[in-house]
Image (cartoon, rainbow, N blue to C red; front, side):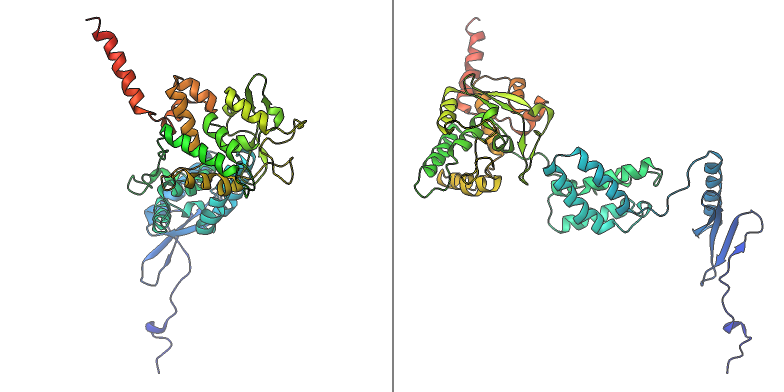
Length: 394
């Protein structure tokens, strides 16, 4: 039997010992014989440990004393990512449009809180963020989607940085190789005049069929020829239309959840002028003695409720695309805005004028997202004519 007094059976010393040279500095022995260092933090009123070297503990102790002398707050060691997430959620709820907030909240709940919510901000360094990005890429998400999912995390880190919980935003330390690359501004369909004509003709023919539940032709035509956002068109009430002066006053937007809100931007509140053909179309569409608060594109069952985006997309837009032979070309409802811009450009509107009609404050946004050459043969002829103007004088 082993003698209990022999060194091999003695209990390992795991207690904390004073350094002996510096007050407030301590160590304890690890199982491998090395020392784990700690120091007394006057801001926290307790000992903080886990350091591998005496020098590291000394440096931390010195910084804590300087911060204490400067009146700086103690580091927050209790707050978790999920705690800051709730503050960010409420701040964004007040500032974002409902549809935008819904996307933001989904990313917050399904990605950030699920993956990182249990951690303290200081535990989520650039390596952990880079790993999250790799995980999202592994799920097959597009770079634009990954950036959208990381947006709440950036807001959380900015809040933590402002409160002194972390010394630096880890997302700023990511290398270019670690960031999601690509998936920027998507290319909208480059329309040809015959395609626009085919789409509007198809919508009219579908709406006139006896089995049609609703005639979506007027809505599709209005979107294509004016460039209204679909939510702006669905939110129109008869009081927003002045059919005598041929103008639409955009004042609201129908969100995807069915609620009414403000237009997407301040520039979204605007006037859009109408051609005689569109005025005639709307005059025929308007019920006799329709009140001003009734929706232009109202539900068949309730004239005080607009049709839904999903019904228009599923029953109106997609069938019209198929009938016009335009399926598979990447055309979305939002692509109709680029069709309108192409028409405006072909008829001589400047970029600034077009941006104003489209409800965009910055013309460069209009250029970057939508502006495309339209009817290239016509453009070529005008370029040649401009060149000839000078050569004829030579």
